[in-house]
Length: 163
Image (tube, rainbow, N blue to C red):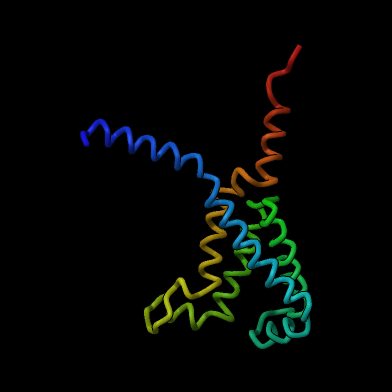
């Protein structure tokens, strides 16, 4: 196989992969969205447990924070699943992951970060979710989302005026 044939095959492969550019965003959004929806649903169904957990962690105003976080995770998860307001919801959910890393998962996170145990960073759920959320903040919801539909509608409506 000559150099020209390799270049053509490589070009074709890259073109075909370009058609699948929307898949990673969709999968990331669905996995992260479902994780938060599921977590928020559990917190909403067991508010006393969430308040007690937040109290034990020393989180200030545990009742208020439990109510806020459970709803943020539940409704934020739904919005991510649909791809609505992704670049607004993802940083809000990221803040809950930062709090989790500083409180509930601090020991595990530090052990993984400093390689003091068998646990790696990919085993620390709030860290992994935070990384995926940062990707959603930067890349957005992707082509297969309500965000993308709204953008196309706005772009179509803001075209040149017709006479």
